[in-house]
Length: 351
Image 1 (cartoon, rainbow, N blue to C red):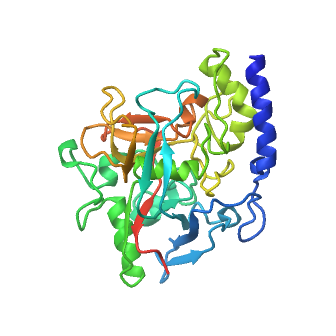
Image 2: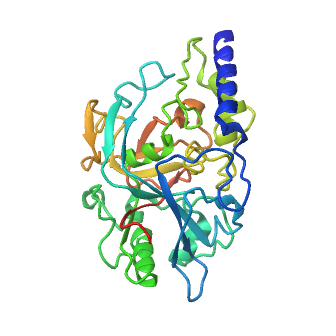
Image 3: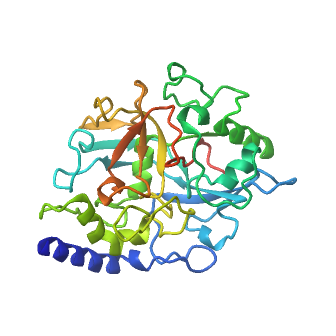
């Protein structure tokens, strides 16, 4: 354990130089305390406040600090526009407790930019779009919908992971927000969906190559053969600033409000822990269907198979399961409280 503690001390020193440990929100526009990832081009805000301006979209600076907006988790829904690019998906063979076939390093090129949610969609935001049972002011992530319902599907056989989220007129959240945003903005064409796994990991890493997105390039190796719980406790002083996850101190015992930990270098919150992000891809960790192929691919999206990919981990999981490269899967029927979603949108950039 002495070797690993020495390595962690070096990582803390690196974080201090990088500026991540001091990334508390400051100022009115930007001012995160670190340099925003250069691939973030701008931010948009969708106004969910009832009235004549509901669902209108406003463009803001790339480094707009959403935590300075008291409505950021309720009546204002924020997304960052991430430009296209190439990155390495998966993890190196030395990363602690990685699963080899699931995380085979693969060079992925995303040929188009996309919007990604700064937070997961909260219960209040879901209520503003869909109506129904009041969740006024509730800032915890929405849960209990599942992959099928979000995409306007009813059976697994009717649910390939295609780009189109739902048929026209669907009562799904993804169709409803698309339809309402278009109507309020002169026909603005934004296709809302779940992120693909490649989009998610690209946005999570935000230019970093380390085990977690707050590590520029440092790979954490378990050279001392520690248990999951021991690793989780050892990582708490740094990982605990960025993630709600399961360590023995009770860092998180239940789902937490969004945005209460530090953001990653793209200004996205809760990319590690708190609640899984549902992704668009088909994937099954039990059969290996959808394992990363290695080599180079463009716009990776698996569309066959019954499992659905989840990323980021959740509040009860050990540190090993909230890494940037960790991949999990559940059935498209699953509606567990630890399964949430983060919006992705493609189409013309908002003027």
